Length: 220
Length: 224
Image (cartoon, rainbow over all chains, first blue to last red; front, side, top):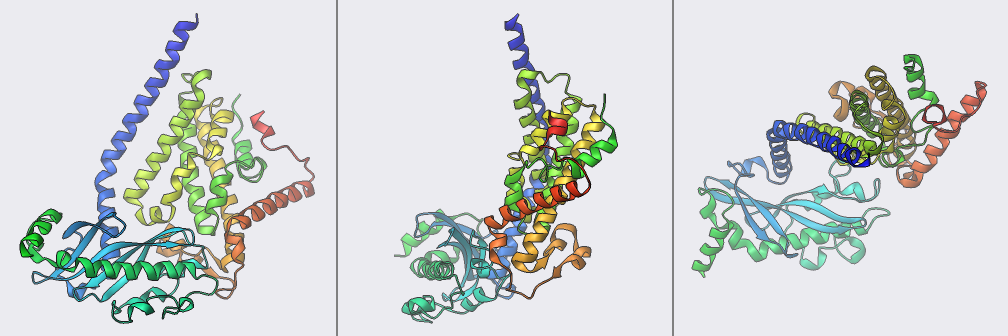
């Protein structure tokens, strides 16, 4: 009596799993393309905020190379080119805020000047730490045009730490984390400038980081 | 045997309201009601999932045996949530950017599961669909009300970013109630959620007592 009962439960459960599994597979295949297109648009949007349109004539999302950053994390470098020459790069940088990681997109021109910084994701306190979002305040725009030499390195701090950047009333840890992330992002650019700006990739297909590294070695 | 539609509507919206009477689904309730718009969006997504899973469970109710009903319910709710998640990501992307993080939370919401067990597994498909819709709307109303209270006190606005959720025509709904930067921050942080939820439950009970009704224990009406 018990045996066939057990079996039938298993069969029914199995049929339900199969049916809903198939339903999800179908949905996934229908939405897959649209979702990929949306993700691409999102990336283009965040890139267009840190790389002005006038300095490039390529699709920045397509011209990429992969590098390891100072935290040993693989990041994608998006490269803007105009008339075949690299005019700027953009890549993700990471800061530590009050409530975890802050993810930002940093755009740098070929001379190491900040083109723009935008926050991509953060978990900071609403009303205090979220003033780093361009939607809330203009604070993040203060970094435009700055570089490692201007202001001097010891001034790349919030005012409370003797630097030149404003902190927010009631929130120092968040801006401190952002300033540090941008400073380190620029130092990363400084250290890997040649590699990022090697222009052999402008005509070749994207994602050829390996080829760039080989190219670098030859030059030295 | 089937429950009258009038009872289903009244139960869902007020008498047996998921949040205010049964105190179910408090995880998304606390997390998503930092603004009225967020509450509204989360409520609507939950309503879609509840209506779809209620209908499905009711259709298959004669095949779902007692022993395996819980895994089947969870399978159905999780499938519906994934379905909503994927379609919103593909076709309602702006809304998805606001709510996306919280859609998976619907699975952990015990309100859909409770309604499947207490209602859809016993009632015909039409009634179950109605129950899903009206429980969902009741949930939406409670979340929107809670979001509105927290948003007005916490950030001084009402329905901020509603145009992102509902389209540009709803820009009119976005209001500034208090001057900027005067909100009491605590209200949009977790403690504010508990405070407002508690106050709304008290408010509902006071209204019920005034109306001369005996206070019911949460869920006793149909979950018994």
